[in-house]
Length: 517
Image 1 (cartoon, rainbow, N blue to C red):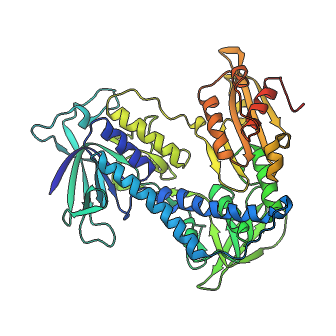
Image 2: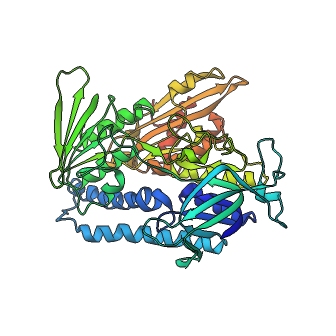
Image 3: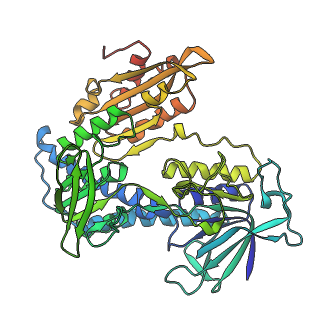
């Protein structure tokens, strides 16, 4: 059995479903394939959304712990983990149902199935099938003209006897034990999976981030290996819930690839909140077993011998591995990522890739925007490619960290930038920061284009602060639109707010400091 579509998308995470929604809006007949029982991918089901639901709860605990300082008599008498789990699941379920309804409303066929394809396998266009949108633009910029369509083979998803089709939200229709889809364009949106330690697969108390969200209660103690967003968010969450958390990191600070001041500040704040951070470590092996916890063995730079630390669980958060398959016959990097151009095209005409399977920031909002670009490119429009320098990075730790644009080192390394400067704003000069009971940092990188040496522009913004995740959106606009620094510094920020820190920092960068020297 075979069905024809203009566009087939493999994977219903942020990159896949954003491609589908925009393509359907542009008039394409779209099939969206997902192996899991629900749409939304890792972000909605096993990552961004459920973790932030738990973080919201532990932020409440942080507030209670600080209550006495404010003259409020309050205490945490315990955590009803069942209620907290139900809250997390309810948030996820609400979002999944909303997305499913939206896909159905746009007329997108959602298929629960396992997909396979070979980019070099194709079939001739059926009679009456036009080239236009179905074939999409190719590497020479022309639209249509190949006379062939890609074939995507579907088999039942794990645990299923048949392929299931969803034309209405939440209403499965059996579609047989196998199904072939044909389309002029195929988008690979298969995402990524947690990277294990070398020679230490996930097992027993040695867990990945997905398993960490499924624990029945917060651990009494935990060892976390990693220094990125996932590691730091779990460290903050578990620490707030009363867990004894040890964080093993390879460098001298967390977020070592970020702006140095940002990483240093967050390292200090996490320590101040009670997280035990051990720097310059290299994990050698982990001893674990069912109900026995995990003993993590490691060495430290400059020290002889091996050391170890025990935790009820050990979370490994050292990055993610793209879910790709050489059988696709598209070009891959040595790391397994799909190679694409700026618009998401692979080396095979009509085959595209989006999200974590491509090289770049493994972030949901990046994948979401990539999907829009791909859909518009297939439709023959002229979309602006995603600029990796303007993709905001966020860590929902306590306090939060956020970054967009160039660091001072990156800006200084670019020959087309002149008069590069770094401006540091003392965050405690802000009233809301002072009231928050936490410290932070804010760094602005500015400089001039060689083609316009008289106009300084905002090149990067890096910060640690409560609600940094919201403030960074304004910074992204400044960096993305390459706004002149003088114009950015005249934007008015409401008082008293955390966002004022950005306004004050911009004034200082423009040599017009107000509440700071």
